Image 1 (cartoon, rainbow, N blue to C red):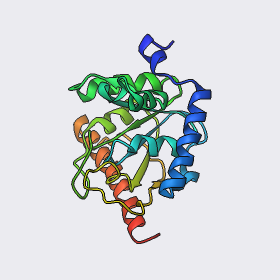
Image 2: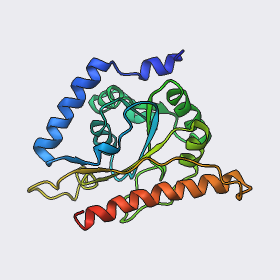
Image 3: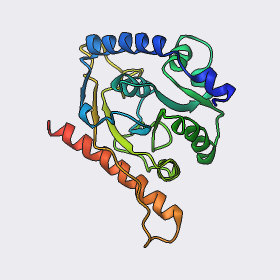
Image 4: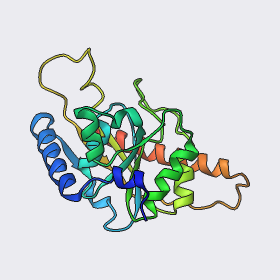
Length: 220
């Protein structure tokens, strides 16, 4: 059974489909949005979407790229009152209190994964506003280990400057989402400390995202 918070955060499938279509049309129309690697999306069952994070718009880009509801664990102020908060709630954002540790976020994520849902997570733990990627936290490794579901790496390009005050007018940059092959967490008996296994897998996820970025940059 879902708890009260889950029920509140669970978007209506009809509303979600309509909003997803509206946002997808908007992204395609104004930002020439395109998705590559859709064949890598699991056809059924729970899984985790793990992507880079440079903008508050990333959850929207990730969400419209998936044919199913993606529940992102986000700071509660992002799901607050106002138009933006309403949109975040409708696309499946799950609020957590600021300062929540990885363990709390993982527990909340597991509730959804065990009900057959899809959860989105940003391994870096927050937005990275500098070039390159941030150091991944252990959370993605812990979540993959405890849930035993595949992790779908994803790279989003083009959202990083859209909300910037320094953004110049003109033709907006194309937004592109690239989806990689699912990754499975496998326990390494040669590694004695779980934290080391979590870190090893978290690094593997970020490396996969980095490979997607490299493929994008060479136009592959």
